[in-house]
Image 1: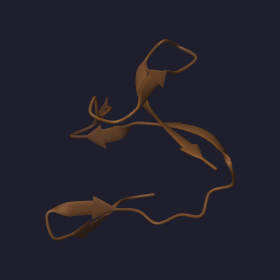
Image 2: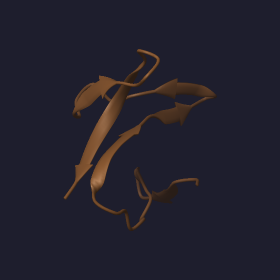
Image 3: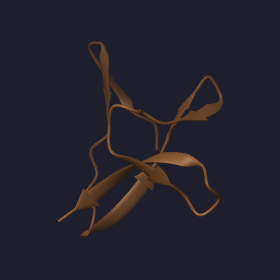
Length: 54
């Protein structure tokens, strides 16, 4: 799903069940992660951001 632009920010609203989620952003066709947010590695050893939903 695409992010919606809100001023200079981009947002996406979604209800998620409890769990740990890994994600990356696609910027100009390339997968990227934000090193300023919690990070980890996916099952292939690629860096990604991690979100723990309680």
